[in-house]
Length: 259
Image (cartoon, rainbow, N blue to C red; front, top):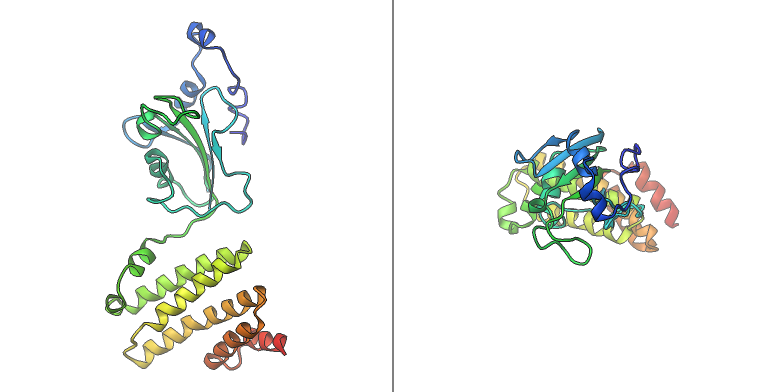
């Protein structure tokens, strides 16, 4: 809420008696007037501050300190809808957002912590305000459904679906690599390799498509295990890449690094 200073003047502790005597709308009441109803019943109100891993902060009314926040993290933890987001209102709000968007969501108790609240931080029947920015996101629904299948079931799915799942896994691996989480990156790349290895190809064309998908995974793994101080494994993956493309410059360069 520090983005445009709108709430900076609101966040001050005001004695309860003074608030009751005052006819001035409360901070949340003022925000309601400029927000859109995304739930249809006024329970989830949204204000887009900046159109465009999730950074978020949650606030109670009359408080300038968040009761929870991850904005201090350089690389916030990846959050999966339906698993990591526990507030119904926040999850519904996230579904209305786009990549890069920064928005505020005013959640009524039934969409937040309910009548009981969450003592000692959240009082009973409290409305809460969340500031959320979608830094980036990946659609993992198709990948999750595919991974839950048995190898036999996976082989009945069109190859194009498998290649999309592999691409998603590689994107997750690339995200982890860029955040220097090399072990996590390696796990995603190897899972993609395993899925491709389980595929029973039916034609030469399918085999070529699988090889094309394998090549960047071998190159990614070569660099990743090199960062994990495993030069022999890096050489192994580089050689596998050269088996697919003997003139691949990245693979040749990595092999040269090991000599």
